[in-house]
Length: 461
Image (cartoon, rainbow, N blue to C red; front, top):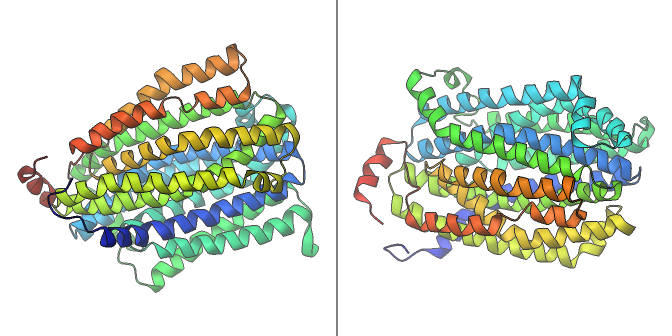
């Protein structure tokens, strides 16, 4: 596809340098979530289901701020490729301000209206009560989660991927240890149940944030702690930022609301299905964790070359990253299927919950190849400056196809849980074909730097 021989060994090395630490960081987080689930499972399926639905509220928050992360990484990577320090600092300050607004808003909902949040996600009063108890504590962790994610985005785009990894290691160790102490009352601590799990999450997020700041200061990172340079915005920068970010923000918000609707439908299923869904979402985090490594690699390896004025290199890397991601995700899904019995049993699944959880895994394994391919392509387009195409595709298919099908299947036709779940992925293969056509057209390369804009004039597909 490229005009010169592609250097695969160098490409794989560059991907590994970025993707592996990110994947390891997410693997650690997912492992901690799996251990949390196993510990909470010993309390009962109601507790597992309640904490799982609280995690869906966290996912909605993720959708609210991830649009700013995606837009921010577009600017971080392109300005880093162009060696524009001032551009990096100012765009980071603007990104962080927008992200933290979302974090504080969701934290306020969790702390002051936890019962209302739980009533939205399920009609099971027993699950609502446990979930509200959990949310009223874990809400303090939400702004810290958002802050650490903003720092991680900047560090990864400036090729300091190990610092967020070390922060995650410290957080995971803290979280697992405190869960063991606070859920069950070990080492003289009170046995707090799900409240103990929530408190452990808050403390571990404090550790994560403190570790990242400490290491950034120790290594003298040139951007993360340059506070005086973060907020020197002007109208031109804010206008450009919002124009580039608006499609991404709308994508994440509307898709986040769409997933909330899907979770509302699934939250009206039997208690066994809700517990199985909570366990599945934890395992899904394992797959998404590996995907996040390739997503960050796409943003950095493609975005920096677009910003530096090398569109041919950006294009040659982009489609290879997508296919490489799908290969790894496919292998991981096969491994989950083969190990399903051991994993689900450890996480407290039995009887009907076990059967439904296996069904979730099988359906997801088939859908994940297309799903992660679509996500990687969309992140690649965004890093290169095209925040619109993938956004429009995802929103249209979600709201015109997926949501009507899922709502009708679950709330009107009362189809089995697995049928409702499968319909939530019905758009992925169709979108994948459309996204591949756009990927190979090269029309998604839209620089924001002067170097990139000038080079694009000379480049033709």
